[in-house]
Image (cartoon, rainbow, N blue to C red; front, side, top):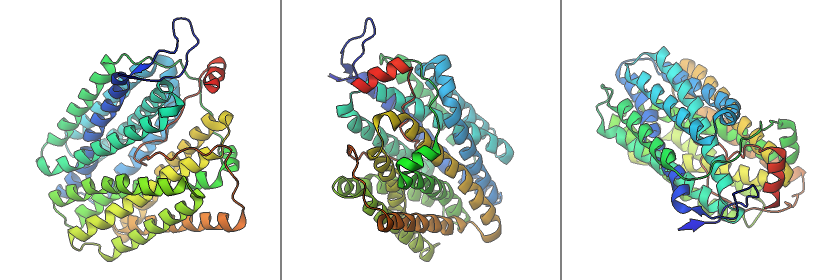
Length: 430
């Protein structure tokens, strides 16, 4: 079975369809990595709590991870230009395995900060490599469906990883070892794939000013959701552990949160395809703010109520990510797409680095519930900004409104690494 791919005009390449198994190999690799990643996200704060470390250390580890992610967004392009997509994927997977091995050596917070920074660099790079590879391999007509399946597979893998925490002995190195195993398994599908590699890319420029002129709401959405995502997903297990919830409780809470991503994005995206996306962004931000307030009200209460609240909270926040990305893409010309996607990715990464640092500093003074207040403030500020844009500006019709595709803020935006000028011309003609 095969699916259409982009046209190639180089010698030896025609309109040959891409085998479905080749596309599936990249998606399967990222889903396997997600299982180990989800487990490690849950394991680190619970293990630190069990060892009696102050929760501030877990916050610093989240900040280090975000710093590594920011570096990954900048340095992945040069790595791919040097060794190609397949080798870059394997190198970055090896770095994740090394990071997990460092964590498995024992609870040494300073080493763990460095290890998670290395992980942040590698996972951000892996997403850029995987998504640009898939973008090159498939035709425009089916790209949305392929990428949607890619994100759903990754989110499902995260959920499995989170749930696995309940099955491991937290005081041993079982969790890092499992993470290493799944990372090693993830290399196999890519190592055996027959999926053709894209040409060597040029650097993709970051132009925040230009991106802002194209879509202020899109840029603001990326800045908002970078902070929201890292606050909720990163600090929820830290806070739950500090509140005294058991290892199994934390695993249940985290494994339930991706459900919100899967069930809320589809209806919100369907509505946004039929109206001004800004209205749906306002609703998603308001829902995220309201869920945050409920999270404060039920903080430390019954686990069942907290699980429901966090499902809605995480799902509404994740929806801002995909809605803002779609809104920005609607307003960009074809020549703007590479620079726009790079700029949005940079905005998301920058916020994902700065906000965890702020939350960590506030947690040292006000306790681990500080992340809830920060998330509420971010959601309210973004909601008011979009509302102000709606009131003060007329809706500018998009040149070509695209179809909404579900995404997750746990993964970087799909960046099309820029090809050489002649390649760009051929890609734009398809």
